[in-house]
Length: 85
Image (tube, rainbow, N blue to C red):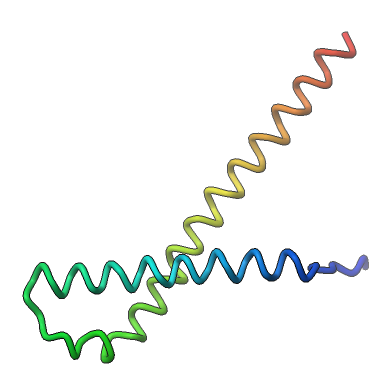
């Protein structure tokens, strides 16, 4: 089997994307606490839920990125086949 290597640059990029997702989930938590007048101690107690939410957001963004990548590959194949004819 062929080995799959993930470059350091790709690892850093994915870490940055996940950290943005974590910040978004944390921001949503702050918004929910402020909107529903919850106790601010919930910021600490709900860190597990925030982390899981960040992975869900990361997965959704990954799915969108995969769809865009696939569409780009499909379009490039279509344009290449049009140029040959």
